[in-house]
View 1 (cartoon, rainbow, N blue to C red):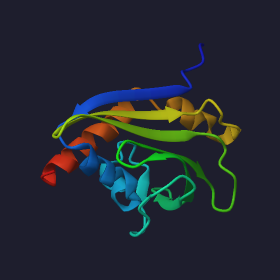
View 2: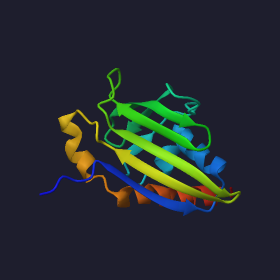
View 3: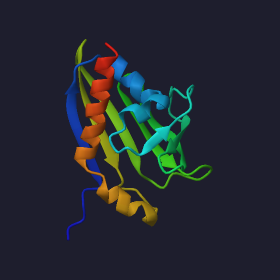
Amino acid sequence: MTEPEQIVSATRVISAGAAAIFELIADPSNQPRWDGNENLASAAPGQRVHQIGDVFKMTLTNGAVRENHVVEFIEGTKIAWRPAEPGKQPPGHLWRWQLEPINASLTNVTHTYDWSALTDRNRLEKARSTTPEMLRESMDKLAMLVQSLGS
């Protein structure tokens, strides 16, 4: 059996401006509304990400809490974080969103899951099961949400 790709991504055009899309990603309290993996339960409001080094907390559907360490950030165009158990160092997997405005109302969006540096063997099975289709599901839900908000 061949090893699955350790960096999976999906790209699509969303009919909305980059700023409106980015706001839904950078405010963790919105993330459960568009999560295609149905893994995110809730995040407290007031955790809007503003820079590298920010940490936001998310409660998963299984009740576990994750501290998400922001490692890449460019307002309006790029955000990436490494999840970790509370008080622990991130085990190495990364979620990234990149937005490229096409014009005022169209944005090319790429969503990436990178587990090439994952060190926690207990997470490997779940990492291997993450597919581009799952990432696309999050983007499709995000597109529906941002369009329903009239952005």
